Amino acid sequence: MVDPAPRRVTLTFDNGPSPETTPAVLDVLSTRGIQAWFCVVGRRVVADGGAELVGRALAEGHRVVNHSMNHLTPLGEDPTFSYAEAEIMGAERLLDELAPTWAAHGRWFRPFGRGGRLGPHVLSSASLAVFEAHRYSVLLWNSVPRDWIDVDAWPSVARSHIAAQQHTVLVLH
Image 1: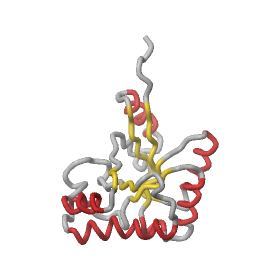
Image 2 (image 1 turned 180 degrees about the vertical axis):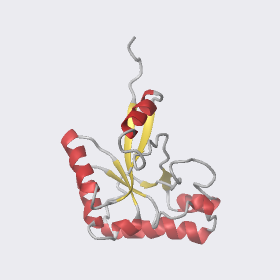
Image 3 (image 1 turned 30 degrees about the vertical axis):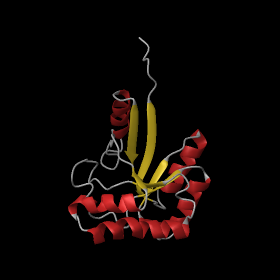
Image 4 (image 1 turned 90 degrees about the horizontal axis):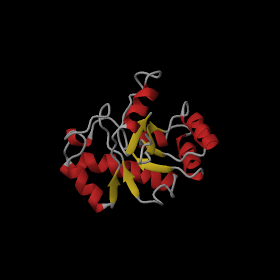
């Protein structure tokens, strides 16, 4: 039996850029002609080589997504406006300065989910107000194969997620 509906995968990479892994990921994506979304953390963008890696990702046609300034506490776990604004806008200011074309396809934010769980801990009313005021879209997910825990098993988990749904937003690290 032929599967009547093609599967769609949006490949995303969280918590970078990382000088140890991002160059190799970009090389593999380039070799295979695959476009991805890189969800970057502000403090890593300003670390050694971070801005250059973001620039390379953009130059190679990938999207860059704001993934917070520090990636320490999910926005729903600190519901204050000052925290949401510092995490979202702090990273935005850095990206605007160091990679001005990062938002050419719109301003996107990937919240922090603590291991990929979705729930009330992910967002707060304050973060939603910041998103609305600054015209952000939120990039959620429906597949986190936990590649950072089991480097051998995650591909099988990812394939099973892809087979079970029409559009998979796959989170890798």
